[in-house]
Image 1 (spheres, rainbow, N blue to C red):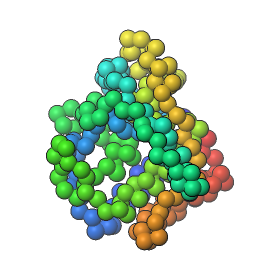
Image 2 (cartoon, rainbow, N blue to C red):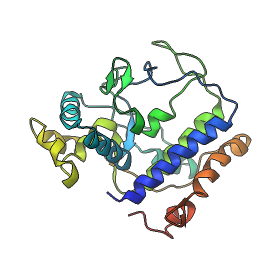
Image 3 (cartoon, rainbow, N blue to C red):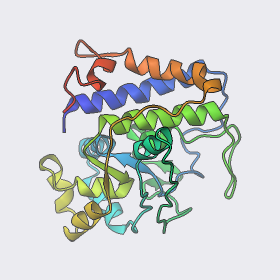
Amino acid sequence: MSHIRQDLVAVVYHSFDRWLSASSLNLACHEGCSVCCTQNVNVTAVEADLIHDYVRHHGLKAWLAAKLESAPAGRQPLQTTNEFAEQCLTGRQEMAEATATTRGRACLFLQEERCRIYPVRPFACRCMASLHTCRQGDSAELPAYYITASTAGQQLIEHIGQGQYWGNLYDVLLALCDHVDKEATARCLASASCIAQARARLKKARPLPGFLIPDDEYDQVSSFIQSVLQENIAGKRVEDILNGKGSHA
Protein backbone atom coordinates (compact mmCIF):
# COMPACT_ATOMS: atom_id res chain seq x y z
CA MET A 1 0.00 0.00 0.00
CA SER A 2 1.27 3.50 -0.87
CA HIS A 3 3.28 5.14 1.90
CA ILE A 4 1.77 8.51 0.96
CA ARG A 5 -1.58 7.32 2.29
CA GLN A 6 0.05 6.28 5.55
CA ASP A 7 1.77 9.67 5.76
CA LEU A 8 -1.57 11.43 5.20
CA VAL A 9 -3.24 9.43 7.97
CA ALA A 10 -0.32 10.25 10.27
CA VAL A 11 -0.92 13.95 9.56
CA VAL A 12 -4.54 13.59 10.69
CA TYR A 13 -3.45 11.75 13.85
CA HIS A 14 -0.83 14.34 14.78
CA SER A 15 -2.99 17.34 13.86
CA PHE A 16 -5.80 16.04 16.05
CA ASP A 17 -3.36 15.57 18.95
CA ARG A 18 -2.09 19.14 18.54
CA TRP A 19 -5.61 20.52 18.27
CA LEU A 20 -6.62 18.71 21.43
CA SER A 21 -3.52 19.87 23.31
CA ALA A 22 -4.29 23.48 22.36
CA SER A 23 -7.89 23.20 23.56
CA SER A 24 -9.19 23.76 27.08
CA LEU A 25 -10.43 20.18 27.33
CA ASN A 26 -9.14 18.10 30.22
CA LEU A 27 -9.87 14.54 29.17
CA ALA A 28 -9.77 11.74 31.72
CA CYS A 29 -8.53 9.15 29.22
CA HIS A 30 -5.02 7.70 29.20
CA GLU A 31 -3.17 4.56 28.12
CA GLY A 32 -4.41 1.68 30.25
CA CYS A 33 -7.91 3.11 30.66
CA SER A 34 -9.75 0.39 28.75
CA VAL A 35 -13.45 0.55 29.68
CA CYS A 36 -14.33 1.96 26.25
CA CYS A 37 -12.05 -0.42 24.33
CA THR A 38 -14.59 -2.70 22.67
CA GLN A 39 -14.65 -4.74 19.48
CA ASN A 40 -16.88 -2.22 17.66
CA VAL A 41 -14.18 -0.17 15.93
CA ASN A 42 -14.32 0.85 12.27
CA VAL A 43 -11.13 1.48 10.29
CA THR A 44 -9.80 2.04 6.80
CA ALA A 45 -7.35 -0.25 5.04
CA VAL A 46 -4.65 2.41 5.50
CA GLU A 47 -5.02 2.29 9.29
CA ALA A 48 -5.02 -1.51 9.23
CA ASP A 49 -1.89 -1.44 7.11
CA LEU A 50 -0.13 0.65 9.76
CA ILE A 51 -1.09 -1.98 12.35
CA HIS A 52 0.23 -4.81 10.15
CA ASP A 53 3.53 -2.95 9.76
CA TYR A 54 3.81 -2.53 13.52
CA VAL A 55 2.98 -6.20 14.12
CA ARG A 56 5.58 -7.32 11.59
CA HIS A 57 8.31 -5.10 13.01
CA HIS A 58 7.65 -6.29 16.58
CA GLY A 59 7.45 -10.02 15.84
CA LEU A 60 3.74 -10.26 16.68
CA LYS A 61 2.50 -12.01 13.52
CA ALA A 62 1.49 -15.26 15.24
CA TRP A 63 -0.12 -13.28 18.07
CA LEU A 64 -2.18 -11.23 15.60
CA ALA A 65 -3.25 -14.30 13.62
CA ALA A 66 -4.45 -16.02 16.80
CA LYS A 67 -6.43 -12.95 17.85
CA LEU A 68 -8.05 -12.53 14.45
CA GLU A 69 -9.03 -16.20 14.28
CA SER A 70 -10.69 -15.95 17.68
CA ALA A 71 -12.63 -12.80 16.79
CA PRO A 72 -16.40 -13.22 16.43
CA ALA A 73 -18.12 -11.59 13.46
CA GLY A 74 -17.88 -7.92 14.35
CA ARG A 75 -20.28 -5.03 14.11
CA GLN A 76 -21.14 -4.47 10.46
CA PRO A 77 -22.12 -0.85 9.76
CA LEU A 78 -24.42 -0.50 6.79
CA GLN A 79 -22.92 2.82 5.69
CA THR A 80 -19.55 4.47 5.96
CA THR A 81 -19.04 7.81 7.68
CA ASN A 82 -18.84 9.62 4.35
CA GLU A 83 -21.91 7.83 3.01
CA PHE A 84 -23.86 9.07 6.03
CA ALA A 85 -22.43 12.58 5.59
CA GLU A 86 -23.47 12.61 1.93
CA GLN A 87 -27.02 11.64 2.89
CA CYS A 88 -27.15 14.43 5.48
CA LEU A 89 -25.79 17.03 3.06
CA THR A 90 -28.22 16.07 0.30
CA GLY A 91 -31.26 15.76 2.55
CA ARG A 92 -31.49 11.99 2.14
CA GLN A 93 -30.50 11.09 5.68
CA GLU A 94 -31.35 7.50 6.54
CA MET A 95 -29.84 6.37 9.81
CA ALA A 96 -28.96 2.78 8.99
CA GLU A 97 -28.75 0.34 11.86
CA ALA A 98 -25.59 -1.73 12.05
CA THR A 99 -25.71 -5.41 12.79
CA ALA A 100 -23.92 -5.96 16.08
CA THR A 101 -23.09 -9.18 17.86
CA THR A 102 -20.18 -7.90 19.94
CA ARG A 103 -21.67 -5.01 21.89
CA GLY A 104 -19.63 -4.32 25.00
CA ARG A 105 -17.08 -7.10 24.44
CA ALA A 106 -13.54 -6.07 25.29
CA CYS A 107 -11.11 -5.53 22.42
CA LEU A 108 -9.01 -8.59 21.69
CA PHE A 109 -5.86 -6.49 21.58
CA LEU A 110 -5.97 -5.68 25.29
CA GLN A 111 -3.44 -7.33 27.58
CA GLU A 112 -3.73 -6.53 31.28
CA GLU A 113 -5.92 -3.54 30.37
CA ARG A 114 -3.31 -2.16 27.98
CA CYS A 115 -3.45 -2.05 24.20
CA ARG A 116 -0.75 -4.14 22.46
CA ILE A 117 -0.90 -1.88 19.38
CA TYR A 118 -1.28 1.45 21.21
CA PRO A 119 1.25 3.45 19.11
CA VAL A 120 -0.69 2.60 15.91
CA ARG A 121 -4.23 2.45 17.31
CA PRO A 122 -6.84 3.64 14.78
CA PHE A 123 -8.36 7.10 14.82
CA ALA A 124 -11.66 5.74 16.16
CA CYS A 125 -9.73 4.69 19.28
CA ARG A 126 -7.70 7.90 19.48
CA CYS A 127 -10.75 10.16 19.47
CA MET A 128 -12.85 8.02 21.84
CA ALA A 129 -12.70 10.03 25.07
CA SER A 130 -14.57 11.48 28.03
CA LEU A 131 -14.27 14.34 30.48
CA HIS A 132 -14.80 11.93 33.36
CA THR A 133 -13.38 8.51 34.17
CA CYS A 134 -15.84 5.99 32.80
CA ARG A 135 -17.10 2.82 34.42
CA GLN A 136 -18.91 -0.10 32.81
CA GLY A 137 -22.30 1.12 31.62
CA ASP A 138 -21.34 4.80 31.65
CA SER A 139 -21.68 7.12 28.68
CA ALA A 140 -18.83 9.38 27.66
CA GLU A 141 -19.18 13.07 28.48
CA LEU A 142 -17.92 15.35 25.71
CA PRO A 143 -18.75 18.77 24.23
CA ALA A 144 -20.53 18.69 20.88
CA TYR A 145 -17.66 20.36 19.03
CA TYR A 146 -15.27 17.56 20.05
CA ILE A 147 -17.60 14.96 18.53
CA THR A 148 -17.87 17.08 15.37
CA ALA A 149 -14.08 17.35 15.09
CA SER A 150 -13.73 13.60 15.63
CA THR A 151 -16.24 12.96 12.85
CA ALA A 152 -14.30 15.30 10.56
CA GLY A 153 -11.13 13.34 11.29
CA GLN A 154 -12.85 10.07 10.42
CA GLN A 155 -14.16 11.62 7.20
CA LEU A 156 -10.68 12.78 6.19
CA ILE A 157 -9.16 9.37 6.86
CA GLU A 158 -11.92 7.64 4.89
CA HIS A 159 -11.28 10.05 2.00
CA ILE A 160 -7.58 9.15 2.12
CA GLY A 161 -8.49 5.45 1.92
CA GLN A 162 -11.24 5.83 -0.67
CA GLY A 163 -11.83 2.79 -2.86
CA GLN A 164 -10.22 0.46 -0.32
CA TYR A 165 -11.62 -1.66 2.50
CA TRP A 166 -13.61 0.02 5.28
CA GLY A 167 -15.33 -1.67 8.20
CA ASN A 168 -14.74 -3.55 11.44
CA LEU A 169 -11.12 -3.50 12.63
CA TYR A 170 -10.70 -7.27 12.75
CA ASP A 171 -12.33 -7.77 9.34
CA VAL A 172 -10.09 -5.20 7.63
CA LEU A 173 -6.97 -6.69 9.24
CA LEU A 174 -8.00 -10.15 8.04
CA ALA A 175 -8.81 -8.88 4.55
CA LEU A 176 -5.23 -7.64 4.15
CA CYS A 177 -3.57 -10.78 5.53
CA ASP A 178 -2.73 -12.39 2.20
CA HIS A 179 -1.22 -9.28 0.62
CA VAL A 180 2.42 -9.82 -0.34
CA ASP A 181 4.01 -8.05 2.62
CA LYS A 182 1.67 -9.71 5.12
CA GLU A 183 1.83 -13.34 3.99
CA ALA A 184 3.72 -14.32 7.14
CA THR A 185 0.62 -13.45 9.15
CA ALA A 186 -1.60 -15.34 6.72
CA ARG A 187 0.57 -18.45 7.13
CA CYS A 188 -0.11 -18.32 10.88
CA LEU A 189 -3.85 -18.68 10.27
CA ALA A 190 -5.27 -22.18 10.64
CA SER A 191 -7.48 -21.60 7.59
CA ALA A 192 -7.40 -18.93 4.91
CA SER A 193 -11.19 -19.14 4.52
CA CYS A 194 -11.64 -16.49 7.22
CA ILE A 195 -9.97 -13.94 4.91
CA ALA A 196 -12.65 -14.29 2.24
CA GLN A 197 -15.38 -14.26 4.88
CA ALA A 198 -14.02 -11.01 6.31
CA ARG A 199 -13.87 -9.38 2.87
CA ALA A 200 -17.51 -10.23 2.27
CA ARG A 201 -18.49 -8.20 5.34
CA LEU A 202 -16.63 -5.03 4.33
CA LYS A 203 -17.57 -1.87 2.49
CA LYS A 204 -15.41 0.44 0.38
CA ALA A 205 -14.27 3.79 1.73
CA ARG A 206 -15.88 6.77 0.03
CA PRO A 207 -14.59 10.24 -0.91
CA LEU A 208 -15.36 13.24 1.27
CA PRO A 209 -18.70 14.87 0.29
CA GLY A 210 -18.27 17.78 2.72
CA PHE A 211 -18.06 18.20 6.47
CA LEU A 212 -20.91 18.08 8.98
CA ILE A 213 -20.11 21.19 11.03
CA PRO A 214 -22.85 23.28 12.70
CA ASP A 215 -22.33 27.03 12.39
CA ASP A 216 -21.84 27.49 16.13
CA GLU A 217 -18.98 24.95 16.16
CA TYR A 218 -17.21 26.09 13.01
CA ASP A 219 -14.46 28.18 14.59
CA GLN A 220 -13.43 25.44 17.02
CA VAL A 221 -13.51 22.60 14.49
CA SER A 222 -12.11 24.40 11.44
CA SER A 223 -8.79 25.01 13.18
CA PHE A 224 -8.24 21.24 13.28
CA ILE A 225 -9.20 20.77 9.63
CA GLN A 226 -7.01 23.66 8.50
CA SER A 227 -4.04 22.28 10.41
CA VAL A 228 -4.40 19.05 8.42
CA LEU A 229 -4.81 20.75 5.04
CA GLN A 230 -1.87 23.12 5.51
CA GLU A 231 0.67 20.37 6.29
CA ASN A 232 3.21 19.40 3.64
CA ILE A 233 4.24 15.93 2.50
CA ALA A 234 7.14 15.53 0.07
CA GLY A 235 6.85 19.18 -0.93
CA LYS A 236 3.10 19.05 -1.57
CA ARG A 237 0.35 20.58 0.52
CA VAL A 238 -2.00 18.00 2.00
CA GLU A 239 -4.96 20.01 0.70
CA ASP A 240 -3.64 19.70 -2.86
CA ILE A 241 -3.03 15.97 -2.46
CA LEU A 242 -6.55 15.38 -1.15
CA ASN A 243 -7.98 17.44 -4.01
CA GLY A 244 -6.22 15.23 -6.55
CA LYS A 245 -3.37 17.62 -7.37
CA GLY A 246 -0.86 15.21 -5.89
CA SER A 247 -0.95 11.41 -5.96
CA HIS A 248 -2.11 9.35 -2.99
CA ALA A 249 -2.78 6.15 -4.94
